[in-house]
Image (cartoon, rainbow over all chains, first blue to last red; front, side, top):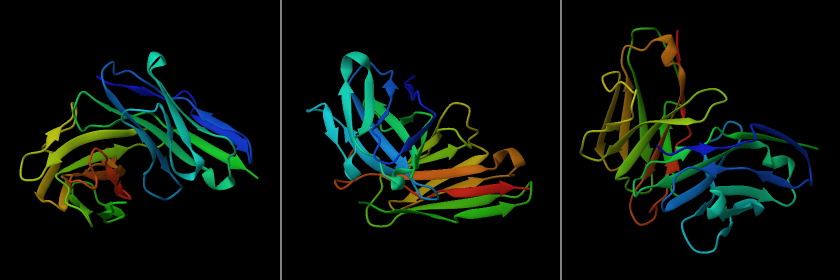
Length: 113
Length: 117
């Protein structure tokens, strides 16, 4: 079975600090990778996704993620966070040709003014 | 992006009753819909996958007789929690996928908070 691990459960940053959230996946074959964000009281929204090609993926709101196949990683980054980035972030993978997403446990990010 | 709605957003019910949650794709045809359960401070756990016009595929450990899923049309799937008990209290989220607009991506509904007294 596939698994996704997110190492940071809670992250607190000051505005303008740089962000990196770790994500490792287990599936050894062709994999699709996703980062979702869930703002307080809102539904999951897609930040970015990787299917193939350039391993550095740029998403919405200044986020980017890098697919490193040798490390089974897909870390999320943002050079300068804002207070409005306070949310829960989920990494997810899809592999083996199926439609099912496997989610990590999520990282709660709090950005302080 | 594609829009998915859920109804109701919150429901409180007595133990032993059944609760139906609707998931609708508003601007696209969803050939596949997924039902997740999210526990506090935990990840989303996939409960089942439903394809329009066929029986749902349940994940291991999910009781299909307790969580009835119907995907009768390309825009509607329902989850019925039968004979609900307090341990069924949770946040239930659906997602939908299908068609060229949503190829290879799931779009999520806002979730339904179920509280069983």
